[in-house]
Amino acid sequence: MKPCATLASRLPYSVAMLFNSPRSLTTVLVLAVLTTSAIAAHAQPPDRAMSKLDARLAASVRAGDSTTQRVIIRTTSSDTRALTNALEGNGHSVLRRHSIINALTARVPVSALAGLSRLPFVQSISTDAVVIADQTSPGDSTLRGTLGLPVQAPAGNRVGVAVIDSGLEAGPEFGDRIIGFYDFTRGGSAASPTDDYGHGTHVAGLIAGSGDLSSGKRYRGVAPKARIVALKVLDRNGAGTTSDVISAIELVTENKDRLGVDIINLSLGHPIYEPAATDPLVQAVEAAVRAGIVVVVSAGNYGVSSITGLPGYAGVLSPANAPSAITVGSVKAFETNTRSDDRVAPYSSRGPTWYDGGAKPDLVAPGHGLVAAAAKSSSLYTDNPSLRVGDAYLRLSGTSMAAGVVSGTVALILEASRAAYPTSSLAPNAVKGILQYTSLPVRDEGGVAYDYLSQGAGSVNPAGAIELASRIDPSTPLGSWWLTSRVDEWTLIEGESLPWAQTVSWGDALSEGPALYYNELAWTQNIIWGSNIVWGNNIIWGSNIIWGSNVVWDDNIIWGSSLIGTSDGTSVSWETLAGLAESIGSVLISP
Image 1: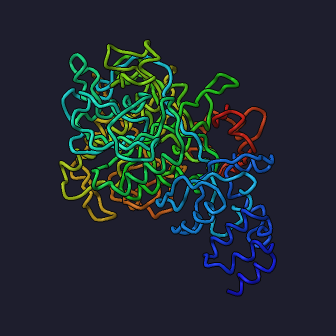
Image 2: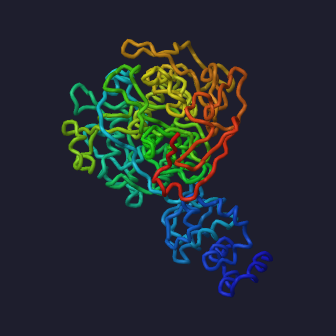
Image 3: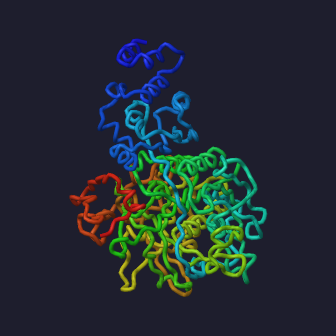
C-alpha cells in the first residue's frame, strides 16, 4: 500500500480519496488520468508515452483536438475489467472487449489520450479506423480456366472459410453450405444471412460459389463445395470499424472447431497508422494464425500515385502488413486462360509496408473483371446496372477479388492434403510456403519480371499447389525430407509449360534451393513468418527483397516532397509524418 499512499499524497483531494475505496490500483490510476494530469509525472516519460499512440492519434493530440474518438486500447494483462470500470465510471463508453489481443474499444476524449498512454499497463492506443472493401473498376475474365482447374474437381469439400465482409445473401450459389452468419454491425449476434452492400457475397462466390445459375457453370468459384461462415462487419456503403473486424476474428478463432473454420478471408483494410507490432488488427490476425487458421488478406487498391498517376510503392493496407497473413495483390488476365499475357494490375498495392519496411504482397492472383454471385438486394447491384452479368452475377475488380481466389485455392490445398494424409495437417505457414513456391512469375509487356514488391513470389498456381500439397507428409519428423514422391516444378495451362517460382520469402530475403521439400521449423505452428529461426543447411538465402537491384526506385522512397525512408544498403530507417494518413486518406508512396 505504500506506493499508493505516496502517489495519493501528490494528487488532488478528490482523486486521492479514491485510494481509500475498494478499487484496484488500475482503476485508481485510470480515474486519476481522466480527472487530472497530475499522474503524468509518475508513470512514463512523455516521449515513450506518445510512442504508444498511433500516427493519427498522435497528430490529434499535438493539434490539441477537443473531440472524442473511438480508440482501441491494448493492455499488458488479459484482465481489462478495471480499465473498463474506470472508463465507464468517468462517463466514457466501452464499446467492445477483445480478449484475443488483451484490448478494449472505447470512446475517449483526445485530451485524455496522452495521460492514458503513460499508464504502465497500457501497451498501445490505436484509432478504431474505418475499414473499407477493396473492389474497384469492372472488366471481364474467366477464372477456373485461368487457374488451370477443371470445372468439376477439386472442390474444397469439408473445408470451412470465414468471410469477414459485408455479409452474404443466401441462394442457389451457396445452398446449404452457409453454416453460420453473425452481424457485427448489430452487436455480433447470430442472424439470417443478409448483404446490403454486395461485396461479401461476391467474394464468397469467388471462393465457393456453385455457378449453378450460369451456363456450363462458367462462373463457378474456386472451391464450390467449401462451407461458408459469413461475418458482417461492413455496412451498405462498404465501410465498417476496426473493432468490429477484430471481434469477428475473435469469434472465429475461439469457435474454429465448432464452426469448422480453416480459413479467414479479409478483403478489407485501413491505412497503416503504426508498426505491425502494435497494430491491433494485425495482432488479431497473428492470433488467428497461431490458432491454426490460414488468414488471407487483400493488399489494397492503392498502387497508383494520385500525384503522378504512375504505379507507386508502399500502398499496402492494414492488416495486409501482418507478417503471417497471406497478402494478395491483383493481376489482369485479359479474358484469356493463358498466363503469359497476365499483368500486375496498376491499382494493386505494392510493398514495402509502412513503418516496418516489410516485403508484401506475398503473391498475386487474378482479380480483375471477375464475375461471381450477386446480392440482388444490395447497393452494389441496385445502384450499378453496368456491373451486372445477367440477373444473378456481378463483375468486380480489385485485390478483394484476388484474395477470394487465393482463399478458394487454400481450401483446395487443405482438401488435397487431408485426402492424402488424413491424420495430420498443414500449418498455416506451410500453406503460405506452398503458395509462394508453386506460384508463376509475372512479366510486363517487355518480358521483364515484375519486382518482388509488386507481385510477391508470383501469381497463384492452384494446380501446382495442389500437386505439391498432396506430396508433403506433415507427420514427417522436423528437419526431415517430407516429400513422398517427386514433383515436376512446372504446370501445364492452355498448352503452356509454366515453371514455378521455386522460391519463398522469409523476412526480407528470398530462398534458393528446395525450401519446401524439408519439414523446417518455419512450416510449423506458432512461428511468426519472417522471425529469426534456425534453418537447415539445405536452404540458401539470396538477395534482399526490399533494397535489391530489381526494385525500381533509388535508395530514398519519396512521398510528395517528403523523405519517408532511407536505406544504407543493409537496413531501412523509417520515419513517421504527423497527419500523413489524413492528408491522403490512404497510405501511398510514389517512386
